[in-house]
Length: 427
Image 1 (cartoon, rainbow, N blue to C red):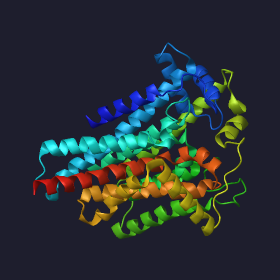
Image 2: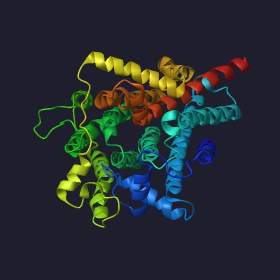
Image 3: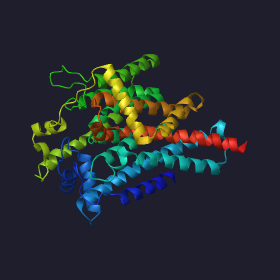
């Protein structure tokens, strides 16, 4: 109920405000690429191209850009619905606890629906999401894939024996890397999430997935090594991977063994490879000589050039602490602009209540915190954006993943406030 209501409200507003035709930016390029299942600008966006091509075929009316924009609106609306459903589901666990057992079921259901819906719509109507959900662009699908990863990890947390949810999360993460290579920085946070839920599973997963991710990103701009001579290192990303690697090593020493969950870990690594393997659609599409064919990916050199985003300036991570602190202040001001300071204060409330929380929600909140650090401050250090107004407009879609975590925490904070108000009303 929470998922459907939130998704319907979001997509209704999106369709009412949808761009009627081509807009500025990459709209014309992306619409043409989607129409012919072609190769847009680097890194090729194969999953987005197939997704948008399907929407063009499913909607046999109006212009091409509008049909692609409807696909963006649908993806963003479903992401809002998943956020709402996660908040509502965790609220169910919260209201089944000892501190809230006197709350009537009708009141708890109403409170969960309202808080989940508000959390989803706060994300959907933030500036980083709304204006990208109305045009032909890749960001809405990236948001949906990332939200799907968090949703499947949350479902697996509640039922750890359902390993297919964990494998599905890494399959979606592999698909996500075909649209947003920079979100490789969230992998350490996702590994911490798994470690918090299931220590042995997380330990073996780190042994398989972290080295695999390092190999997969070797030829991209978002790998540990930023040049072919192995002299320029991506310091922030290396620090994130090393932190999780050391944590997994400590756990391995403490548990006195590695490999008890090797089958599930290998299956997750295989799912990650399957998702990333969609990049091989790019040379196949290039062989059809479409009207949009960046990099001429049918050749080996062209394919590597496309994956490495060769036409763009190379990534130069933040090199000193003072610059990073200034960037963190810039990130905080941008988050306040997107959400509002009351919402950010409410999002901080669950971590004040953390010591009194139940075990499941404590793991969930700490896992979300780890993912937020990866998707927010760590990504900020890797991108190293300039601190000006123009840069804010350009880079804010990159932080939609961190805003998703803020929306989840905000919804759970509303649940805490609502539970306290309901109990005081009873008294």
